[in-house]
Length: 369
Ligand code: NAD
Ligand code: AHE
Ligand code: ZN
Image 1 (cartoon, rainbow, N blue to C red):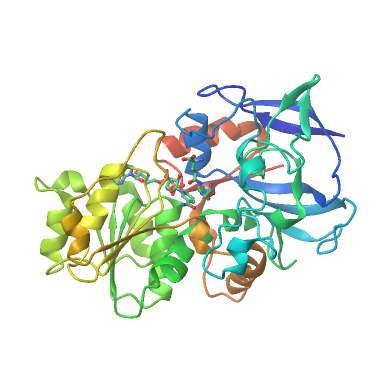
Image 2 (cartoon, rainbow, N blue to C red):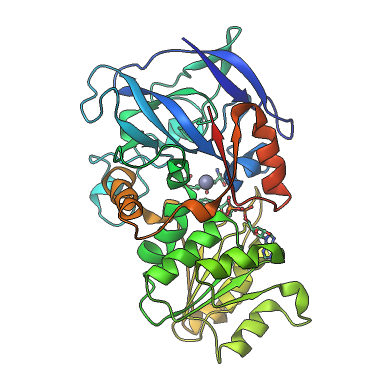
């Protein structure tokens, strides 16, 4: 079949919308019509050429939602008409990582997914006979995409697909980082570096966990209004201080935060976030994705004296078994996704979504097919 897709031909080149060929689902695969997709900073990161796993040409996009149109042989858990969210971290109940109960990082198809192909080693996308690669196993910047059955989460039909794309990455990542990875408890103090959609979801998760103090940090003060509306008790711009931001935070909290989160992708901020933690117990969670070759550093004494450094992917959420419940929480009114969505646009305007995110002028742009 044909599908209109935004092609990333090479790093740093604007995406081009083309009608390309899409092979139907093979055994164990599903064809999904994407209704909306939104743009996450990780798509920007990969297009920038900084992602060691960035392969071109490809169809980017990993934050989306849609409707199952067709299933391949052997697929039993979803059927045509089901509403689904594509998962860049699948959930295979037979994967030893999933069976461990200790992680959401299913490895069943990680190798082929990282190589931009389906589990059988081939791509379903092509253009004029030339292979176009998948991205993060999802490729949601196409009106139709093919995914392994283990890479879709079936969600309630009550959830509006005009907004549900943000449940494909930003919201579960930020909220999950607080609830599953850091396990923030009521009364705790929290700081989040980076007030994009992921950082905003950290704030929302911290509020839901009953945090007593939530400090938002960003060099773009236009983000502070929304951060405070979501529940940040204070916002800081590191540019307003001469001292390193970790010293400022340790001073203003009487020794440091209980929990900090880095949601930017800067190794310097990852260090600052760790060093803003309270001696003896403070825990810092890395969410941001840093470019190829970059490394984190701190004095080991920071860890010797009781601070803990963690990381999280997709907020530790197991996509098939836990994401549908998070969508239900949204439907029950426990939280809203509306604050994250600053722009709606059509597929042809996808490069505008990139420009807005890079300029710090959007939280999430939702792209409609
Ligand atoms: P975003 O671009 O919307 O937000 C990033 C924010 O960081 C912006 O508000 C920006 O002004 C701020 N910022 C930039 N430099 C800063 C600095 N020096 N100090 C303070 N703030 C600064 O991005 P997003 O979509 O919210 O994603 C945030 C990060 O999380 C990215 O690195 C993304 O790749 C990563 N991410 C990781 C996961 C995961 O599973 N681990 C999931 C989603 C996104
Ligand atoms: N490919 C990069 C790493 C990118 C990365 O860390 N991705 C996160 C999700 S970001 C979503 O916006 C993730 O899930 N990581 C776990 C995994 O297995 O990829 C690199 O550095 O090679
Ligand atoms: Zn993402």
